[in-house]
Length: 376
Image (cartoon, rainbow, N blue to C red; front, side, top):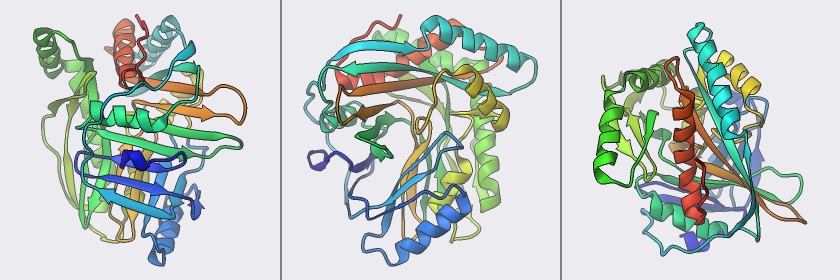
């Protein structure tokens, strides 16, 4: 399926299946979650291709980008592909610098300890100017091979000129809906992997024992359960998280399962209700957003948004748009790739450790691009 990807396509892979959608027969951008879900549902009733795909932005002032495609094709889980180089960067600009990010974390910790917040997620970015156009198809193949247990995605974004594509491999499913069954799988609490097996195992055990990370995780699980509760007749929320890993990071994970009260509530409506979770924003949401705006020197756009699909029955799957980069291909001039990485900040957070965590998270994209950057 990767070989059939073309610029402008939508791709979402999971450990169970993959969806490739092409073309834009109609685009829906209604900012109101209820109206967005209603419009998409109505359009899908008579659609020759009964699935909608796209992205919800992190920025609450930006419009969703939901597309009814010309074609959509499903397959089973994708195989590992031979690795191939993607391209070289001629310049790398960290925004903010390591020191600037550490200062932002320290400011956030002060606010948290003053009781203004329970949690906030702060991100930093790397802006790469590329030596040649990026082969997104090769990048996706590398990401699929590196992240078989996760979700690889590419989604075309609105652009006034040229092309914008958000591409990445996230470990986090926001939610899936199959009939009246809803599953959410929040991740929060992280620690870098290590190439030494003994040190790596110790890192995982340290995460499981970390009071700070368990508290961070509990905040997210509570928020997800609270957001799902009005839609569900029952919810199963495990008492303790489990430990999962990507190639770069260990995570605490909780799988929440619910049964819908109203079978007419679609996966798109549920995704809008859950997004953004404290895993990418913080809590309380309004205060966390204000802190992010004050401390992050860039706009997130669709980074930390939600990417997914919804079909005519209301079923669908949505993932959290992290471990990603935004590729901008102008009509003239070099392409740029902006990579994003964030960390959940709690009252007990240590700025230097959050710098280390975000450096590890950058490796998902850097490894897939074949780039070796010293982020220490």
